[in-house]
Each structure stands twice: as structure tokens, then as C-alpha cells.
Length: 256
Ligand SMILES: Nc1ncnc2c1ncn2[C@@H]1O[C@H](COP(=O)(O)OP(=O)(O)O)[C@@H](O)[C@H]1O
Ligand SMILES: Nc1ccn([C@@H]2O[C@H](COP(=O)(O)OP(=O)(O)O)[C@@H](O)[C@H]2O)c(=O)n1
Image 1 (tube, rainbow, N blue to C red):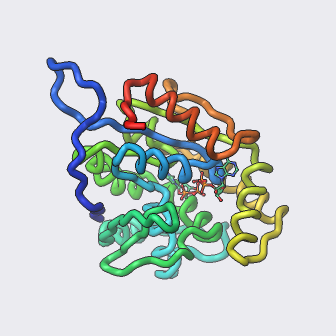
Image 2: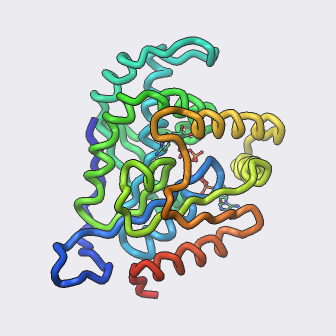
């Protein structure tokens, strides 16, 4: 699998000691579904002119393709063929293109744009089913690391601060209660003109949390040096301001 993004010419804007080689800053935003990671990641990437890594999109694409290939079925008790998912993963060519209208990246797979369907909860569930496979995670590791070699990076996921970028300049683990996160999903779906059942959404969020937190490889958990931020009672702006201040404390320079 390969991933590309539009080249960014921005050099490091982290204060750099003259004895150290120039390296690009990395900011990791990890946490469970609906915590607000994507929202704060987008704002940081915009403000800093950094690239954005939506690592969840990688797992979602693999989950979607595995489903389309018949490797995942609706019945979650059926075993999934890890080697077949791995082979499929290795053949994917993915690129991310920032989309100012949606405030997320558009995902291009093998030259074709993937629709918004990839963001839905069903595909999120498929993603978490294939995300337990160590070899699939390994196949996605190098390309994620490579994204930090071209410019500053804001990376959104579950294991950005623990596994992919353990030496990152800034690590944040953003949480919120399952109820607050389900409530946000309901609002999101209703705003998009879709139906939303709070109890059903809460149940799927809890099931995904459980799978992500309890898998053996790269479970979702805060890095030891991460700032823990509970957004249950904070609006998106307050979260952004707190994360921005933490970035400043860690030496990241904002122009405004
Ligand atoms: N602090 C917040 N308070 C309320 N709603 C929020 C907050 N942060 C994000 N949202 C909204 O919640 C939904 C999920 O946010 P998102 O950033 O996609 O979360 P994640 O990437 O962690 O799954 C979106 O509709 C977003 O606008
Ligand atoms: N770094 C990552 C990112 C996502 N994932 C998996 O991919 C799924 C979808 O991630 P996502 O970030 O798109 O999900 P949301 O938080 O947006 O709902 C997660 O539930 C995880 O199972 C992962 O294992 N590691």
C-alpha cells in the first residue's frame, strides 16, 4: 500500500537547537470515536500549515475493501482471513486531499474518490475488526511514519502517540463519555438529514471502544506523556484552545 498527500513546502516551525538536525514536528491526537479528534486535528493542520494524517481512514478503507471482497460479513462471530486482508491492503494506493468544505480529507483509492459512506458507523465497525490484525497494522505502519518526513504533521488515530510516532513533539489523548460521543453522532446524522437512534449508536460506540481498547496489538490507550483531555463538557472551540496552548507549551509556534 502507498499513501500520498499534496506536497507541503513548509519547513519546521518548531524552535530548533542548532546542534540538532532539522526535523519536522509531529502532533498526535488519539482517542475514541466521537471524542472530537478529527475536528481539532483539522484546525491545527490549517493553523500550522501541516499535513494531516487521518489514520482511521486507512483502517476504514481496508475494512470497506475487505467487506466488498466478501472477507467480512455482517455476522461478527465469523472469522476473517487475515492473510487475505493483508494481501488486499498491500495492493491499495491511497491519497488524501484536504477538503475545506467538509473539514476533512477526501480519500482517493486506486485513483477513485471514495464517497462519504466510508465515514459511517458500519464501516467504522469493519475497520475495528481488521485493525486487530498485527500484520495489517504493520503494513500500514511505514507509510504512516513516512508522512512525517516531508513537513509538520498532525496525526489523528488510536496509536499515533504510542506506536507510530513515539517521539512526537506533542501527544494528546482526547476522550469524552460514551453518552456525550453518541449524542454528537446523533446530532451529526440528524444534521445530515439521516435517521439516528441514540441507544443503537451508543451500543455500537461501546462495542468499538471495547474492541479497540482490548486488542493485543496497539490498543487504544494514552501514551505515558500524553495530555489527557476530557471533552464531555467542552465545546469544540474550548478543546482547540486547550490543545493549542499545550502545543505552545511544547514549543510549537503559531502565527496567530
Ligand atoms: N467538543 C465538542 N463538543 C461537541 N461536539 C463536538 C466537539 N468536538 C467535535 N464535535 C462534533 O462531534 C462530531 C464528532 O467529532 P469528530 O471530530 O469527527 O470526532 P472523532 O474524529 O474523534 O471521531 C462532529 O459532528 C463534530 O462537529
Ligand atoms: N490509528 C488507528 C486509527 C484507527 N483505528 C481503527 O479504525 C477504526 C476507525 O477509526 P476512525 O478514527 O476513523 O474512527 P472515528 O474515531 O472517526 O469514529 C477505529 O475504531 C479503530 O479500530 C486503529 O486501529 N488505529
